[in-house]
Length: 345
Image 1 (cartoon, rainbow, N blue to C red):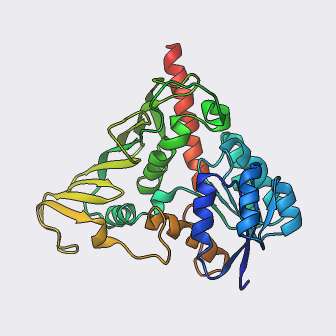
Image 2: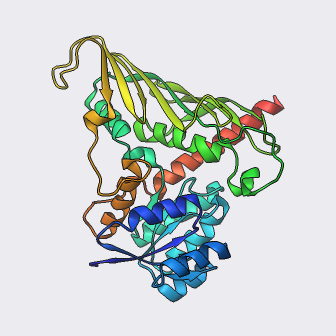
């Protein structure tokens, strides 16, 4: 394959963002988009006359016959879109969360693996320069075996009582703080430490939402003795932009990180990295690698280029495939189960 024919399904905020990024890839041609908004489709028809536009994802796949698609629909629609794409041997990049149903996530993971189709979930933290650096340091044993950790995420997404309802108002559709933001904090734990063996003490609170959780906290336990906490809040007006925060405590030191920088405390000098005993500060400008096109952050470009380059066989394997998406989905499902169990007790 010399050039990828690509379709994008769902042209909301993330669909438009992904369109602008992947359109810069020299080996990708966006041939079609699908959305239910007539206004969006009319604008695209006017300003991108060669682009095929559709109201239905099946029409897009059947008529434009793309090699790959990017799925940016509400989460409850991910399964049917991805499944139809798999039946037509199409590679898929699916926005997070992977699905809103654990059994559907398992089925898609297995189907795409059986067909050897490239598949990826949009957990963008795995492509962030800081978190990739943290992963490297963990693998190199910079702070030794991790004993405790804390993964947090804060946004000011919901700041007043709901007046109207949308798909985000119901968990079955993929709404709520767990699917919307905790998914990132959970996948970050899966990526850096691994999927927990047990989840306990889960608590969910409603502040402004009627049907879904606004705040969630929980404890993750591992058979090797590691444990950590998850805390997310999408009603925190002290944050202007979404913030992922991570604290890792090991036997040789600790790491504090967010998507912009990290601080490392070491009990002794580290000759390999050159970091000294005590506190060391690393900014993203110290470790970042540039990308060809910048929107929102290097990681957003890097993840889509990785997807395209995996199809073109310029990259090997998938850094965040549907198997990783399933793992995050499994943890989210366990949070809901544990939270309900705690209510009964």
